[in-house]
View 1 (cartoon, rainbow, N blue to C red):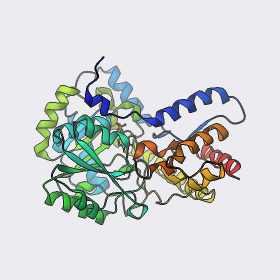
View 2: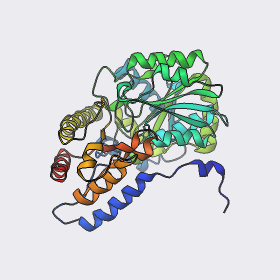
View 3: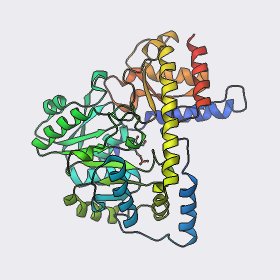
Length: 398
Ligand SMILES: Cc1ncc(COP(=O)(O)O)c(C=O)c1O
């Protein structure tokens, strides 16, 4: 079978190998004193709250299960517009909001709408691996720019300006980021946007973790910067609906017809049942529950990160959002006899999995420059599990 070059360019997820090995080991150690703890999974441990579940059942029972318009049902686009006004104080008209099958489909549509073959898109290293693959699937080239802790592992305006070349078309950012949980400082984002705009480029910003912000200094949407900003978002993280496959993009008005044409052809629409259910996310009772859960995520972060650091796993940038800890494992790996090689976090993740029954994610997939010495812990797990994870790491690294 001859596979298209486009498919060949999409790299495998190495972390899936670790995840598979963790699953296999979990089956063996289930029922022992130390069953596997999974801190490698990037999704909330909570499910959709009761009102949302009920709304999904009602949609099914009343036959609201046929195709919807490609851009999504009007009440949901309006509910999101109202949410932006209430929560972020920004005016985002419903006509600029496109409902999609998760942020993944939103990223795909936006990349296909904006990127021509050979176009270059600037992105930070480290970043969420799928984002560079969306660029690649659109036959563009993702140019990963190394970042430092001092830059919060995000791009800076100077870096964007220096890297901008003849083929550069724009930037693809994520704030808060996966794997670091750190956001772009608002003043820096404004400067990046100015640099991009002056070069007639586009700014795409993945704001999928914005709802899970814990610091007012960072928790603002980039949409406030102007109508040319393209923001990607989702019901997966703050709204705890990963498997419901529902997200959205806010795009400039001029882009809506192109996105609509492609959405009609590539997806027809996002899940109808999920769209009707998602209306219940904005009921005061659901928002109160989401805010309670956000406080729980923050409490987990506040417990877990100092505990990790005390064990010799420093987290160079304190995450202001999401549910990740991006920790330098060089020193801890050495304690386990793993040398400070280019990819020591791979061996460290295996050692932690095999010896402490703790699944974590090595940095390899998230970039190329310095990712081999970092591991990503997900704190989307109960406080009891996080405490047990720290106790096991303590024993392992003592
Ligand atoms: C930064 C980032 N963007 C996009 C996605 C895709 O999310 P969705 O479930 O909405 O497709 C994820 C999922 O983990 C993510 O971490």
